Length: 318
Ligand code: AKB
Image 1 (cartoon, rainbow, N blue to C red):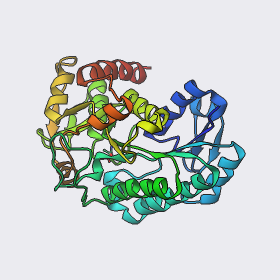
Image 2 (image 1 turned 135 degrees about the vertical axis):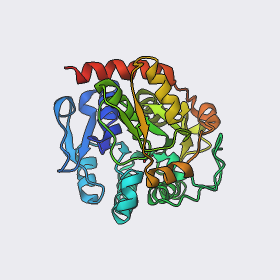
Image 3 (image 1 turned 30 degrees about the vertical axis):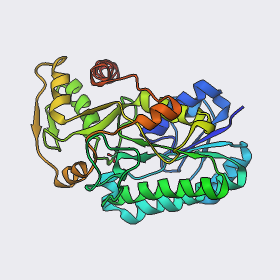
């Protein structure tokens, strides 16, 4: 039986990933790792064990690994792209010094490790349409620099020490549970909240800014199925392009208006967010993920929008 530690269990992805892993592997086998300023609440707290696991404090991870006989770590600790630009030293400390701590514990205790990369690992010189799996990665944001380093360091621990590291490059993740914080793709979540609350949405990006996005159930499915994949089939490891939909603000706005025709949106471009978005791919080629571990998304913009609006209506009108 697996024993899994999720580091960053109270964050946007961690909060839903922990519950999904508990459904699959049993509540007692999935530990919600948190930092003291962000304690688990509600179902996350009640449904299984939790423990302090701070990536900047190697001992805290080691204690949990030993106590719970952890064999798999999902390391989700990171600052997102916009906030990392204002706190670059902290972004490095959490993303890279933190990863080093996680990998060292994994090496000692024989754990597999999933540490996501991102579309942010690409830069202006990367081909932007159908970005290949193996291509130029010269990002100019601190977020991107930490994500490329994450990929390299994770591969290094695999080839040098045999640590079973695997990862995907997440696009913008859209969910109706825990809001994201400080990302360039956050607008694609915020727009649904505004639509359901009946508020005008102020869009921080130009109408024609394309980026890859994904609905949370597909993102969870990607992370878990990659970690369950037959290692003999993996040619790549850190990190796989995955894709399900690519849209611009004007396209998502039009899709929401099919359900809420009087929904209004205005553009007030944020120069930092726009510059970051312009440096990222419009769409990724995920052929390698499809071939090496049978990746296949379930949601597109249409089906995601129906589900998002329904779930948010229930959540916000309670
Ligand atoms: C961000 O916008 O920073 C993240 C990402 C795409 O990695 N959502």
